[in-house]
Length: 176
Image 1 (cartoon, one colour):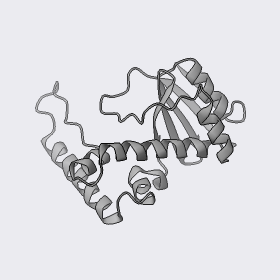
Image 2 (image 1 turned 90 degrees about the vertical axis):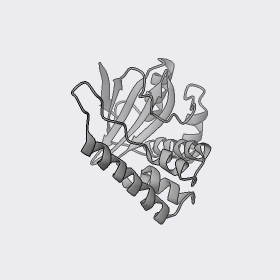
Image 3 (image 1 turned 90 degrees about the horizontal axis):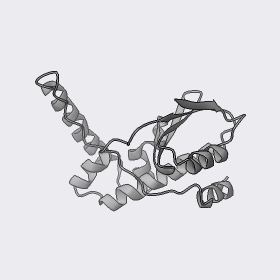
């Protein structure tokens, strides 16, 4: 089951409050033109985000906030690509075997000693808030919430952004 509609009929604030009050788990996806942004919920709490806007990719946000430079990002992304290629070339040995999961960029940067896990979480939380704040200025977009079971075990949760308390919504409205 999914909930979908347009921002012309239900605004971002109402959507976030509805999902928080209902303690929903799933993905709230917004799309406008070619841009797609997602907000992940777990039991009504915002725990992460996604985007296809290159300026909001995790690596770009790290550079923007001065956590790493372009050369370090490129180096970590090369490690990630080589791991994906190695895993793809090996593949599962039999149909019941699952291919190994690739490490996320933040995991690689932590392993390289360039960031701490706390810094990764801090930047992911900032990115999630930036994505939400940006959605408040969207006047046209399609949205869809898909109910999902538990989030994947490798999903990096940014902490708890309680929208029911109004703090996030109040801050977002003051930011626009």
